[in-house]
Length: 79
Image 1 (tube, rainbow, N blue to C red):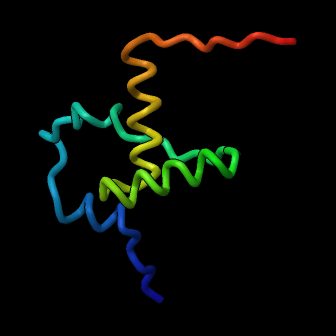
Image 2: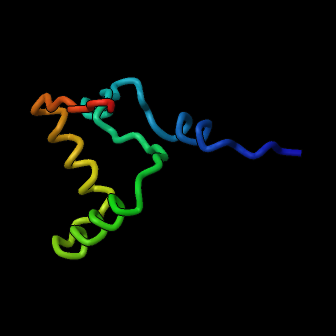
């Protein structure tokens, strides 16, 4: 009985990867995570999404990225 080739085996057989170049942008790929946020935060970004036409997840990422790029610090004061 003949064993079916895996996708990896097929690719290695059909294509020459010896001169392949690593994708320089591979480290910039986004990471999928699960977070818990308040309903008001969710509603805010969903409303912004409807207005801007940008998906709410992208808007949240853009906001957080702006915080990172501008070295914003949290101002948390415990009572």
